[in-house]
Image 1 (cartoon, rainbow, N blue to C red):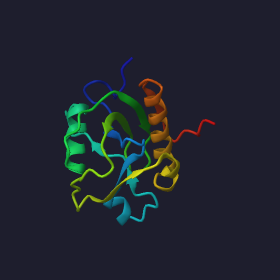
Image 2: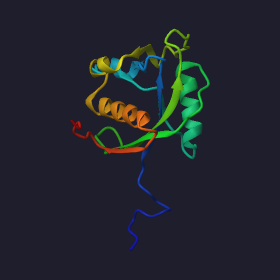
Image 3: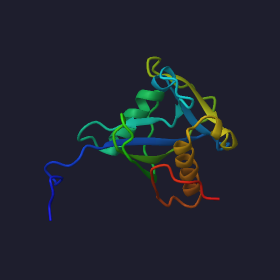
Image 4: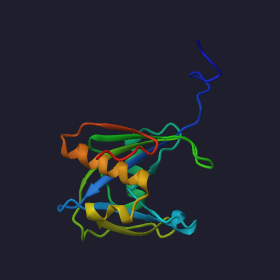
Length: 164
């Protein structure tokens, strides 16, 4: 049975293509998002990447967003995590796809767009809680765990409770 939400009028969803990029020591590349900092978000940091444009392939969105944010061409590797985020007004429902972005040396020069990003850091795993909101921390930890386990794709929904 079809409802008002069918293939011709589906509900709007945000699609995000994010990159897990590490340095050789395993620290995670995080970017300080200016818009989050300006609105007083206590956790303005996040993974490189962003929203896909209408009809844009996720790999193309990954390439475009990562290049726009760090000024380097990075190819998407394995899909590591899919994270569904329910709507939380004013934010729309979204699905974030985290791809393996490989490794970069921690001293590699990155070109950040000043209007969008304030800073970048390779953050050691034990310091991530000081940089990431709880939902992002679970996303990044799950992604890293699955990358180490042989690239199994993880599925998260909402803000899951940490698994101990």
